[in-house]
Structures are given as C-alpha cells and as structure tokens.
Amino acid sequence: METYERLITENEVIRLVILKLECLNFELISKCNTSQTGIDIVLKKGNYRLLIEAKGATSSKKGTPKYGQPFTKSQALVHTSVAIYTAMDLITRHQGEDNYIVGIALPLEKNSIEHVEKVKHVLSKLGIVIFWVNNEKVIIEAPNQEIDLILNYSS
Image (tube, rainbow, N blue to C red):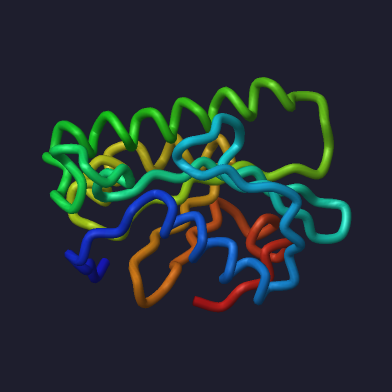
C-alpha cells in the first residue's frame, strides 16, 4: 500500500472521511472532535448506520510537545489499539441490532499500516471497515462483499 508521510491530525481524518462518505450518499448524523467524547463519526445511508472511530498521525492539540510531530511506532500502536478496541466495544454495545456497520479511520502511514496488517484478518472477521486517510484520498477496505455493496464505493 502506498503511504504518504505528511502528518494528518485526528480532526483532519474525521473531516476527510465525512467528505468522502457524503460523496457516497451518506448523511452525517454526528461527529466529535478531539476535545469531545463519543463516537467520532456517525452517518447513515438508507437503513444503515455507520459508526467510525478515528485516529490521527500527530497530536491535534496546539502547544503540546507532540503537535506537528509524528507519533513513534509505539505511540501509533497505542492509537491503533484504542481505535480497534473502541470498534470492538461498539460492536458489543450494538449486538442484536440490525443495520449498523463499524469502522476505524486511521492515517495512511507506515506505522499504522504495519500494526493493522498484523490483525487485519481478525478485523475482517469482526466486520470492521478500515478507512485509510491522507490529505489526498480516503481508501476504504470493506471486510466483505455485503458491506462493500452497502458502502457502494470505488477507490
């Protein structure tokens, strides 16, 4: 997978995923920025709700030591792990409900890609959609054909 090293914050990831999904006829229900708590992105399309946890490649908080600096490999692991855990928690909280899809949105950068590659098979089994984001594009990896058809995208 081609990567881009320009750092992208969580707030930028959220904004770009929303733009991509609105182009795919999703309607934004709610979003949170890094100073808010809750599901980062909630959208709907027809009868389906899409719940997404997002992470960035650098801090979104100006004035912090990590603002504008890339996360280390271990920091990227923590952020990726939190996104995956949150996605699994959303699946657990919504079990028994129909018509929802859970996703994670991550920066398209080498550390995040390496961490996800190690568990991608499990993410697929859980039905978790992966949104890879940089400043130029959003790549969507659907875990199965059914979800692929619901998202109705072309990368």
